[in-house]
Amino acid sequence: MKRFMGLRRLLLLAAFAPLLFAIQPGAEAQSQNRPHKVRLTRPEPTQPRPEVISMNAWTIGLAGGLLEGAPIRLAAEIARVVDDGDNLHVLPVVTRGATENLNSLLYLRGIDAAIINSDALEEYKSQVPDIQRRIAYVLNLFPSELQIFVRPEIRNLNDLAGKKVNFNTQGTAAAYSGPLIFSRLNIEVEKTFIPHQIALEQMRKGEMSAVVFITSKPVDAFVKGRWEPGFKFLPVPYESKFEDYYLPASLDAADYPNLIKQGERVSTIAVPTTLVAFNWPAKSNRSERVARFIDHLFSRIDRLQAPGFDPKWKSINLAATVPGLTRVPAAQAWLDRQLRTTRASQ
Image (cartoon, helix red, strand yellow):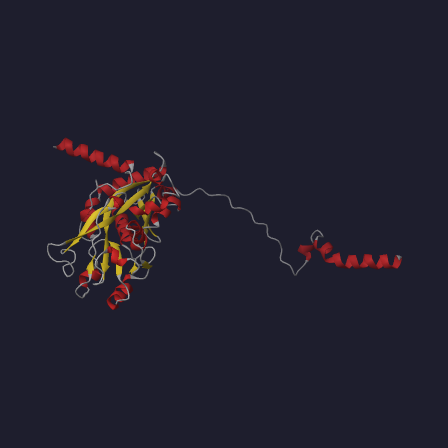
């Protein structure tokens, strides 16, 4: 029995010997096969240089949209015109699309303003009940007309029920607003989300019944493309169901001379494309940034309306309202000052 107990002790010592040596003081330093421990020290924090503080104090993040879309181009043009060195620096941000920009404005750090489609608010009614207090509009940029282009055998909207209809690729205005509008029209269609240029070719072959564009008219594909008789735009009447986010609009021969006869008008609706800002607390640094941004933008709007910029700027009305939203206080204050100045000079 004693011999057995002695053997057991030897076995236990053999099993734990590596551990015992490993915890010996200095054992790791003495081993040439193991690296020495390096004690890292946290560097002392350094104060940012004054010019860095100044640069960040007056920088605005502006969510634009997809790289190939009109909103990011407008955001880039805004940035060029309002730039004032360290006094104001606007950073246009490429995002997943104008319909996603509201999400960026609400939750993405560094974003103070965004270009959105006004009906994007619909998605946030349940998620963010106070959405209309958290954001406010700066400027109604331009309308994006709903343009439903159909094959000859389609005579009205109800004929599209159950048919294949393309809404462009995900992230575009058509991909978000199109299905939402069709839902309000109570028309169920077979929705596809492929590039419009592919869908238009499928239309020619009879494989697609309609394409839905939501963009500023005119669209090159309809102006420059050759279409057989019978291809046309369907009218969409402006009704009370659209009053919350949409505006009445129309298409005519001036827009599409090869598809619409002189004197005819195709009624439709438009989705306002809007420049909005987060409603920061009054007198906070972020609200002061937005106020300076608005002052520069409104004061220099004539530069954007000059040659070399998007022609849409020429139709911009600073006083135009946006359905479903209130104006940023700084924007309203600027308009009120201009009105008082105008009256005083008369």
